[in-house]
Structure formats: C-alpha cells, structure tokens
Image (cartoon, rainbow, N blue to C red):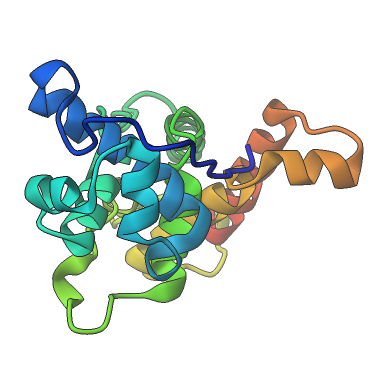
Length: 213
C-alpha cells in the first residue's frame, strides 16, 4: 500500500490530549509518525509535519517522546510488536525452515509499515550522532537462530554454499521486506499481484540463500 500524508487544518485546543487522555494523544502521534517515517524516512519526515497530522503542537510531541529521535525509536519498536512465530519442531530440516520463512512473511504482511520502515532504516543506517538509535530486528534474530548449526541441517544435506547465519537471516528478512514494501506499484506494473504467489517465490528464494534448496 502506497503511503501518503495529508494534513488538515489545525483544530482549536491544539496540543492538548483528546478528552484529557495523554495516552490517546501519544498513540495518535505514533500513528502519524509511523506514516511519515514510512513515507519519507527519518531524515525526510519532520516533527512539524507529524505534529500537524496528529493535530497537536510540536511541544506536545517533545513532551511525550523527547524529540524526533525518541519518536523514531518508539515507532520502530511499535510497528514490530507481537509474538513472533515459533521455531517449527516437526518434519525435515528443510520443511521446518520453509514453514518458518512463510510464517515470518505472514507476520510482516500483517504490519503494513514494517517492511518499508525496516528497509529505510537499513539503507540510511544509524543517524549521525545517535548510533544507538537502531533497534535490532527480532525477525532477523529468529531466522538467524533457526539457521545456526544444530537447528537447521538442510544446507549441509543439500551440499549447497552456506552463508553465515546472521548474514543469511538479514538477506532473507530483507527479501521479505522488499516483496511487501509497495504492493500497489507491483500490481500496476505487472497487471496483478497475488500475495500467495509472492509468498511462495520469497520462500523458495530464501531456501536457496540458506543453501537448503
């Protein structure tokens, strides 16, 4: 889904939590920031734009998040909330890995902004002066764990090249994000965009990266 930001006129009482509810104000700022950062990245989005869409003033944004860096960290953490898939236990090693990759794809597909935010974060790297800004992607950690010796023997069984688990995991998660980052554009170019077909293609390509296909 392509992301765009539209700003309406400011309302009276700007900067005050709706109905006196600070938590609701915080959530509204987070939702506006998620759309802005996913559309423009950290550098392109501005606190003034985000505050405008959330219908608060910039001072209120700073009050809740301490500034743009704190808001960005909160957005990255918020979009990836939820229980990650469990590592499958039954079946052959390749079958277990196949099911896990599919489950991570499904987890990502349910979180509309996650793929684009993750890709933008990887492309831009840590913000200058704030190397602690980036948050480790839990999906990468899960995939890396599944690819470590003793957890997944598929690569050795197939005799294919084996990348270091962390690198292979990042490539697989990156491929999932690329496939899901902008579905409408793919649909416009290809005359059709079937999520199931894309999912299967990503799983097959990921198995090759892991040396298990």
